[in-house]
Length: 244
Image (cartoon, rainbow, N blue to C red; front, side, top):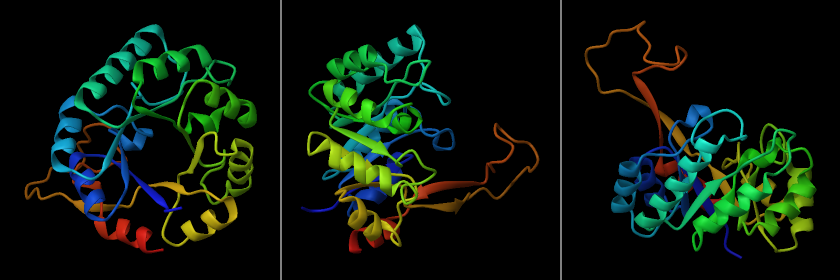
């Protein structure tokens, strides 16, 4: 089976770079430092216009932080899913938990129903749930197509034991996709030791701003992030993963 590479892309430009590097699919997100939030309608539309062979999946996450959502946040998610369907994207990426760390199954069923017939990936909210094996069965029952996970560890390499067990337990009923820290130097090991065939990675570099005039010391938001550099997907890093 061919290895599938999904790139976590933070812009339409990054989507184009992912396609140029040979990626199979992207997860398009905004606010990567917060773990990814829903990108704008315009960003998704431009990304669709800039790519042709790339499967476009879009994260549906109204904010950073936890995965316990209020009624108005749920309504926002529903509207965003509907807009993505109108744009013709192939899939959405989402997740939801209860206050006690279980899968919020009723909400997940409703989100999957609204998303149909798009593919649905349950994102790394899975890595914060109480019981991964119980959650696996519930996510399957709710109709999701895949789970993105680091194996409830800081990165997928450290999470190899759980990822392997999840793939064995899933028994082809759902795709288990390792993500977080998947790189050219470790993807072969993760594949060999888990049996995974789909992989999620960022393949990003830091790019300097083209601004000539710069006013330092006046942060626009997070004071630890410079306004004069940004992370973008780099096609050569994607190619390196493909060649492994």
